[in-house]
Amino acid sequence: MAVNQGFIVVNPLDKRLKWWIFHEMQSRVDEFVNQANGATFLELGRGKFKNLPVCLPDDAVMLRFCTEADELHAAARNALIESAQLAELRDALIPALISGRLRVRDAEKQVEDVL
Image 1 (cartoon, one colour):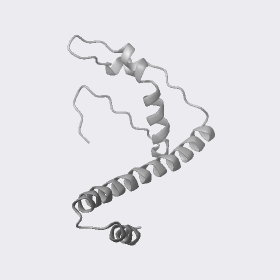
Image 2 (cartoon, one colour; image 1 turned 180 degrees about the horizontal axis):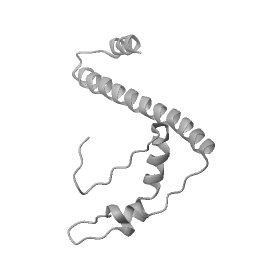
Image 3 (spheres, rainbow, N blue to C red; image 1 turned 120 degrees about the horizontal axis):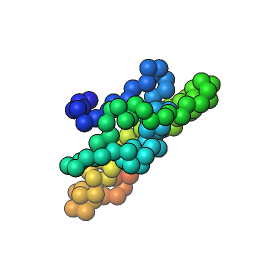
């Protein structure tokens, strides 16, 4: 990753809390934009950002949230990978089917072999 001086990077000290921080920041985008200023582009200064309050539940709640969020994000990541693979397969099969180079029965066999 690369960032320039216009970005504020937020990394939790405890890596298990990455999803809590991610969702906390994502849920507050409108607030951050409202706090930002600038003539050319909006910028939320580091000092102003550091003064914004952060809502943190007790450790047990936060760790439970992060564990469950980790599972959900992993499932979403796997679904995106599967979707990309299926789109690639579709994109390979459709031109062959339309041109007649491949028949539906043959395509079904190829799909079965992949799945």
